[in-house]
Image (tube, rainbow, N blue to C red; front, side):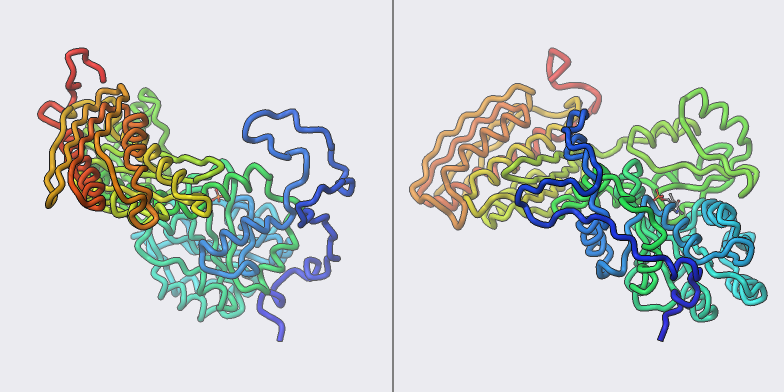
Length: 551
Ligand SMILES: *Cc1c(COP(=O)(O)O)cnc(C)c1O
């Protein structure tokens, strides 16, 4: 039985001869590569982009395809990686719409590329506007597509740009069921920010549902131009035919693989959660602002505002150097504003005479070496989440004690060369932890300086800390056992030195007692307790606790 995709595809596309593109050599042995008319001389590009950019990239982008398939929970033959979701929209229209004959349907106000790609291809555009309340007019859409008879693709956008509205999966299922001979393309460019699940895995099982995803928004890779189309393998095979050979540049492939490293996923999740929380906070503040008629919070990484005087806002934004997207075709006062970093959000709020209030002190560190790949995120003003995976269970427990006793959230992920030993992972995690903490402390405004002492059964540990910006470490204590689990006890001394160096702190640690487990744990706990005091903002949060005025 032929699939719907095969029945709907342009006959010329199905008839295309197979193009034999040189694949990259699979083996690691030295290859003399004279098959692709590349320039064998080393690239005249310096820095991390150089790589082997004089060679063509992997034509099938196999590694990134596999990674993104895993990310979206589908099989590699159920996904086509494209140059952004924009390219996927274009490829779909080219694969399915014959110029002058076929049509696409979309529901404005929505993303402009659906109609644009159709017009470029010479396909008609059937527009079925959203209701006055920006809801999808399900019955009108189904009716219009049935009546027209030539619609090959229906574009639905959820969350919708620029309204932010989410289309309930049940609605998508009803439209898909009502139009079994039409491909329903669900653009999920912002789905990571919404409170509904992606329909990507469902699309691989349905005959006429295709899902678009992108790394531009949630994963911060807009400049790399990486998106994807997910659907049944019969459809992805057809779309793959209309893409140019070597479509994805090697620096983009490398950047995407780097950004999607498993160690970074908790950091992405944390950033997405922050953007969602900021979206709600900003929506609340802007609803109270003068001249703002309404705020649509939606499920994406932007707000849609309705303002009384868009011209005046445009002048204020221009003067302040803030770029906003005015959308008069949606409503005369409609303005789309992206949720940005705390500083960017403060600039947006300032346009409306609102102040951001105190934002959380957050810090991050990414550390990639030959031995370890580590990502750390700290939020000093939040106690959760704590998620630590160093690969050494006892050390996870120790770092968790530090964060729990310090009272801040800590995400720390490490992939290290544990097959050699635990040394690199332990030390590099300590360095990255200190850097992230230093980042979170920023200018070290409003923080206290000193520390703490802790008894634990027969053990006593004392940690004195001065977040002075000047590294100094002193460790008084000895251990008799060589290891606790996979954790070498001698590392404790090194860890505190690494903390001191990367955090920019004077650290004095003293521990006495009989039991090595107690002694080790007491050091980490006391360090957490000392940090709790030292990082606490006191009184006037703008003053630096030093007579010099800087730390
Ligand atoms: C931004 C956006 C896209 C394009 O994403 P890229 O992957 O950067 O091309 C697609 N659809 C919608 C609704 C968007 O807002």
